[in-house]
Length: 258
Image (cartoon, rainbow, N blue to C red):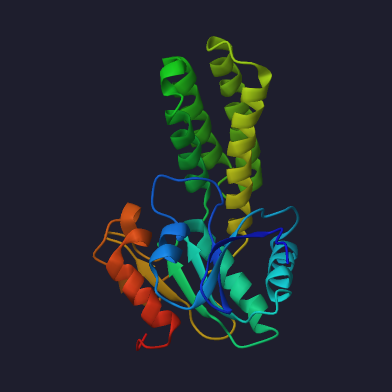
């Protein structure tokens, strides 16, 4: 069947492994690297289009499509902010079958501070085309929003997205680019922020069973008392590391005491 919400990373067996991470590109290794390196007989699917609506509505759509393939879900994996989505997907899968193995890689919570950090990081790629006053103003706005509205993530997101669009307008004007490029830049940033807001509705526990956190060097799980495996690998290489691949294979095949 043709998939709308998922894209296939590999297909080496009947069981599904569902991978939750932002579908856009990133400098660090991603689930495509993990799927290519983990020697298990399974089909790895990666979240594609999150879609609109509440988290519950999105999860229902994602899981319904996965289950409609007729394949059992062996595991659900989450990376960074996607960890808070993976637990919700695992619970939805468990409503009609066994609780899948749930692995959370370098899990992080979506907070006012993390939204602000993503905003300033996104501007770094365009910093050479922005003035010092524009960059200072953007940083000041993010700090003010976090301080004034620490619990209102949608409000912070709206303000930062609006400023990002304005700054991209300045960049495209200085580079003599047309409006299409500005719209594409803003669309990309808005899509990422929307994904983070959706993840912010999630959680780091499951109703049945207990997820296992896998953490790179210097990373701590976002919850106390979590089952956590500390890995001797940097964040950027975590999902392409051969020893991580071996450990994940053991976990997916039920051959590890964790």
